[in-house]
Image 1 (cartoon, protein in one colour):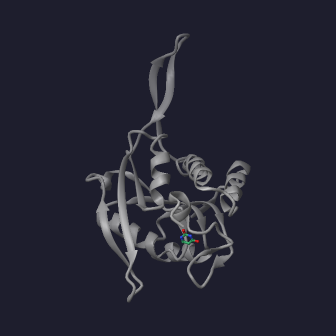
Image 2 (tube, rainbow, N blue to C red):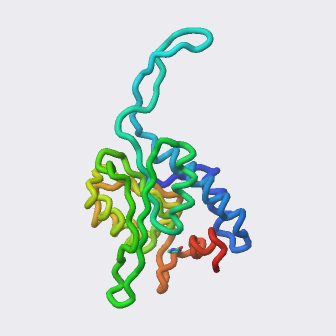
Image 3 (spheres, rainbow, N blue to C red):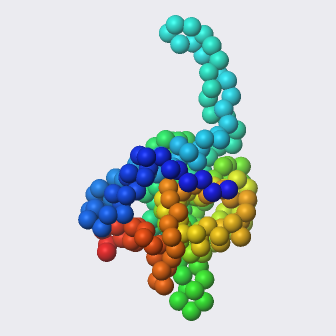
Length: 207
Ligand code: URA
């Protein structure tokens, strides 16, 4: 299932991120803020259970999070800012990292770094990658999570191309996707059109 968070605040922030005049500081802040808004939607189905407590006025049963613990997993490097922002909402979540590069000959994603919580199989996993473009890295990252035992995975991206969504739906139909927008297409260089450019470069000021 794909959820597009079409909230006015989300769309407004995304439009500023798209603007080529937006500088590193503002882009980074917006990426963090958008990540929180996406997480709010992505975590809508977290389980709760009643907890007995006393307010200063009266005792009662009030909902607190229950069920599986959470893990945030960032695809390096651009996914890092999303995970680091979202962990402020769910500070008990464990955080994993997956680094991938594309082999120049086979064009297949190759993992160069993989550090996941050891109990990932018992956790609900939220995988962060701001740009779901070809879907190659996200699909490989999801496979690494599954190989490590994860059974509950949601992919969170700021922007997606239809091509990337189709790859995840084909390779991992059990994985839900939460995005701020789905753009028109990929160009010949694998960039999302109209997109926002290279998210990693714009977050880290390396372009
Ligand atoms: N990665 C990016 O950072 N931007 C794109 O448009 C596609 C992939």
